[in-house]
Image 1 (cartoon, one colour):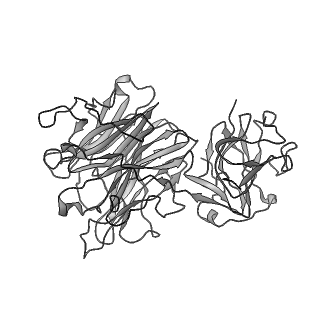
Image 2: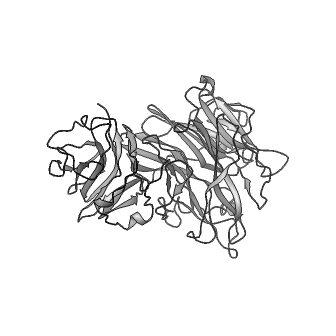
Length: 496
């Protein structure tokens, strides 16, 4: 990927540049794909505006809670979500206090109303205490992730599952195992071991499967990507330092050695590491990956045990899934009030779903901190969600006094321009098109630009009532966005 002027953190303090300093680098080919704002890729000059990390709306819904004997130790923690047209599939880990707690089981639920209500079907797949009338699909696994296989995979392998599987010879040793399924219910082990956790809890660099290890088919690079937990170093109180690694493979299972791509740094508080990553490739736009890392804030010892502390959810973004930016480290999902069902810890799972113009981000919430469940003998848990608007993870925001920014040169292949923006009642946006030297293109100047108001995920931009851009497509241009009290989430040059 070609680098231009990057404005990840300094973008939060707007800077004014002159058009005379426009970059002469080759234009970005944006084609007809949607483009979102993650870094400075589409921001060359900016004034009175800033790049913002948006926080989702916390619904407070208790979508799934423990309701069966096989769930009485815990529910949730590591969940996977796949949307299949109007049906949303969700797999979650669960355990009882007796037979399933070493390490755990995978259960299944589904929704047909956009994620508002869920059904735990009786699947007749796994026997539990003499009955198959349950929603269990796999047992003796831990840290599982379910994802859709590559498009050309056999129908019998449409769904893939990666997890650690209990090794009865050694506590906390979870060799990694891969499974495939035609329906997400009936699973067959593939016999492949993507990588092996051989060191248990030793204090050095190793893969550790005692948490969710994300895996997915990356449509951009056409490879399987694994995002495993890697223990590296220690926190200040002597606990293992949890980080996020990344590995690639052409085949499900044969991964190269993971490299650490996300970890704590000197700007993080002492005794902090990252438990799970919740990484996704965002299918709604080009070159967009998002991470929802569970920030584990360890208690110092004494007075609390070292492996305990609250966990909340932060945000990171990337263009390639390898190089991650953290433009705002404040949590996007905060812990609830003391004593509430979500006061202690949260873990975002893998996958999102879309219903209308909203995206659901699913996570597990707990009333106790990471290690506090030991005192009462069970963990509990609630599966809930947070809501983003489509493309709403980050935006370029202009204040009440107005602002603007200019993009580097781009080449598009569509015939009109659409933007995802929120102007509420009093905000507005106008767009001017420039040539590579910064000169307004006749017919598309600021004087020609029609004022855009309201709030829409795909609003067509017009100039003097005209929207047709076919006369300048496949030609390098720059966009100048002029805005007042607006959040701009994305832009796109689609075809009719």
